Amino acid sequence: MAGVQVGIIGGTDGMGKWFADFLGCRGMHVEVAGRIRGLRPVEMAAVCDVVVVSVPIGATLEMIATVGPHMREGQLLMDLTSLKSEPVQAMLAYSCSEVIGCHPLFGPQVEDIKDHNVVLCPARTTKWLTWVRDIFAGSGAHVIEETPERHDLFMAAVQCLNHVNTLTLGLTLEKLGFSIDELDPFATPIFAMKAAIMEKVFRHSPRLYAEIIAGNPHAPEVFASYREALAVLSMAGEAKNSSELEEIIKRSAAALFPPADQK
Image (cartoon, rainbow, N blue to C red; front, side):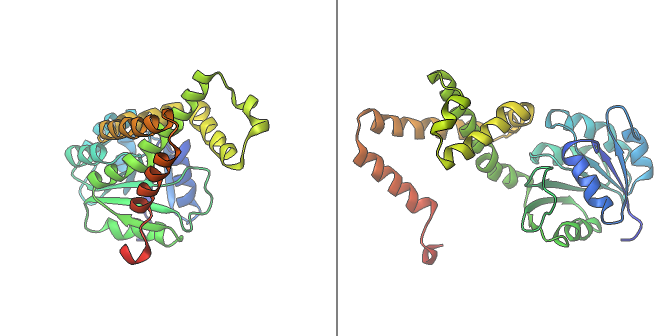
């Protein structure tokens, strides 16, 4: 579609800014709105063909409720949040426009999206899905279409469990009385990589990771399974039973990494 005008609420920072730059480099006219500059959301809905909500997870539903009623049929309302079920439901409820949930599975530091994954959750769309899909696929990304509910289920493992594991590692080191600087001279390559991830989670974006974990509807299942797994490992470790630990690892390996002929 030629001459598409895109408005990004939250387009001055984070993934919103990344998306604005991404579209701008492809010759599209992009309006951005931040807290203190740019069009107001209602004004954006009046002049843009596509409106993208890219604000913190905790503010997403409120922003959708603000802009959604001003969207018209034939326009597209999108979001870029890490969770999809509630935002997509809200976009459907508050707007009469087309609705597509979008989750780029990478951070704003990525310059080339070739071979990166992007999830689309088409909810109400006739003309805009091809346009959105082509934007990402045309730049080499792997585009996956999924329901919001299954997206959040998979993100419970890929993000929620992953970040809980990182937080648990950091909190345990704190309780043991270690700092990362103190451990650095003894770090293996794998620990150094994990230490860099811990720094990102603990120091750079604590609000983001807290909202990803707390907001996922499958978080209780994640915590329950995590406790069960830790209990099994703790019992074998405290008993100094390396053979049992080895068998636990082997059993899990068979489930996690089945042979090619069994996939």
